[in-house]
Length: 170
Image 1 (tube, rainbow, N blue to C red):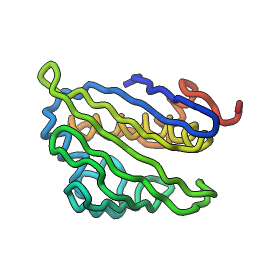
Image 2 (cartoon, rainbow, N blue to C red):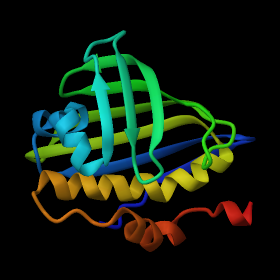
Image 3 (cartoon, rainbow, N blue to C red):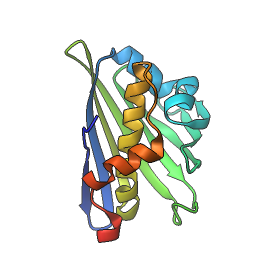
């Protein structure tokens, strides 16, 4: 479960890139990424509404911080690519809010799925905080797909935090 992602920073703009192998079909992984019921489990989505089509919309209240975000679905290619805007207004954890893009790419590989997640157009400070959180969420996705006990988000965040650049050092 120690598959670290990368944080790329250019000025005050940053992106996160994660690659994971999941021993489940792209269809199964897609369902976990797009089903409000499944998002409630692993993504801790307290509310999830998805108009599943290119040009559709996505809205969630999720995670321990209960971020409320909305966005337009930019790419909807079932079992292959899901890309959407992640727009969140100012919040106690994101004082300026964020307007970013999240892209999941799924590719059949070795009897399972190669998952690539890219979160782009983040501010530098947000990316540094989101990197270990995204890692923790992907570990929760993997456990969910395997019907294993989900790792506690905060515990997992703290366990992997040292593997990412720290906002404190910036």
